[in-house]
Length: 85
Image (cartoon, rainbow, N blue to C red; front, side, top):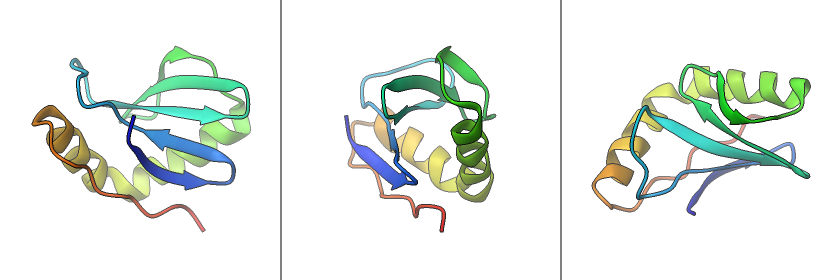
């Protein structure tokens, strides 16, 4: 599970072998979820405050997330995406 970003205790990662709509996985403490690139939780649960932080990060990094999704689909190495500051 390649980690593509970390910020405020949140870890963001993507898998190489997943299909369906573009998404990533997020983990914060004991909570984990799958989030679509539209910012909606597809599976699992996540604290409300941290989800809002992730949604801002998605907005700021949407193009890089799309690129990583495409790289993952090809089985290629993904790029690290800058954290929120």
